[in-house]
Length: 120
Image 1 (cartoon, rainbow, N blue to C red):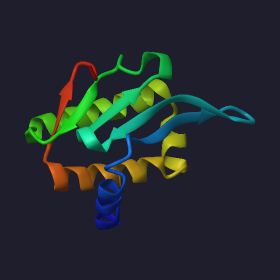
Image 2: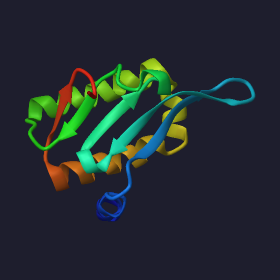
Image 3: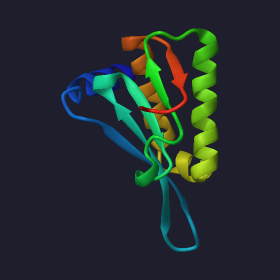
Image 4: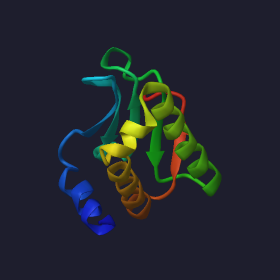
């Protein structure tokens, strides 16, 4: 799957982004809490709490990181998911696995990530 996602990243490179939702479910309906936007042209992930505050949380850029910054970035994504949604729903929908595979492909293609305070 990792190789396939690497080609997916290259295939959507000319598009502006891949958006994956962070959500939870109440008794009847899924609730949208935010997104993780993969901006392949910029080699970056942007956790988005909501569309009106798209640059509030920060960003992860691949390429100039270290093992320490890699751990920090992974921790920040987990924190974002816990803050903006439900981890159980994140896992249930397979969205976590999709993002993990994209992450692995991005590290392989572009290098280790670095966290920045905002996406501007």
